[in-house]
Image (cartoon, rainbow, N blue to C red; front, side):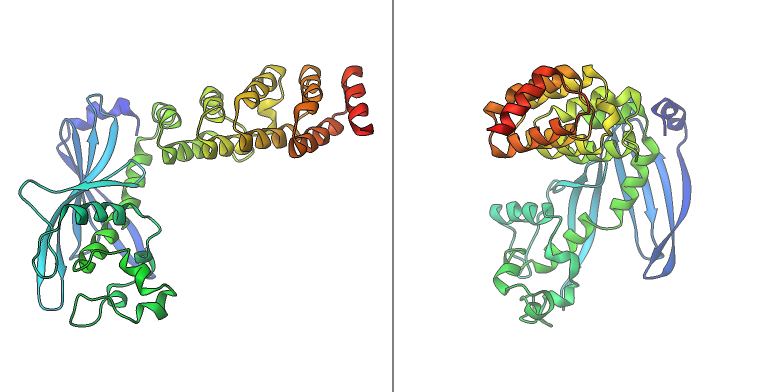
Length: 344
């Protein structure tokens, strides 16, 4: 959805969207009612007859999306009782869990009604922030001994993990709470957030995402501006250059690898890439040398590479020699350096 359309939409109090999802091979109807105010869009998502929730999108003063949140009320049911849990969750625009907080006056308690301590709240944040949790492959009955809130010994057989490892994933006396809240943090709402953000996607958002420190945003935006053949959409070339020259090795290397060799075919871009090489970390230098080996190099760059052979370690030296040998045109100076290096 283009931001330019947002003021028009703000005039609408609400409307509904209906779609289809599939769960365990069965079709599930999902209805989303959208309500507007100046700073928040509300999505009342109905997954089935018994499960619905309001997902909220925070907007800035210009109507640009900032983050998602939910004011969650959920019963956490133990064997003999259910207790209400009030908590607020926050996600980024791609559905990555960020943090939680509690409504004023609300606390979390354990199975014996003991209130969470400060360290319990800190541990809960660590538990919820762990996307690759053991909870992903477990059901509640796998974790709990029937009739208690104690971890079941049978968890060893189901997960191959030690009971000690499982204990590190939960808060003593609050196993149900940890499990229930983690499942909400990484549940079906995430897919809804992705669809909503996709509806907002435009060039302004993509530029912002590529410049953001949130690497999830950068990866998502790169998928949208770098074509499968490696061609970078023209207006986003400066953004990709900034990522390649950036401090995050993983996003820099990904951008470099995704970008097609044609992107660096012109001398100006090749010289820029070599300047980037000079200040890059060692792993990024190796990635750049491998990239250069796929590109016909201009004479100025081949001479710089040849001159740098003497100050290279074994790995760099081998890569530089390999890429120089692949070039069909070398200056006499580069040929002499290369011949001398090989003779040595």
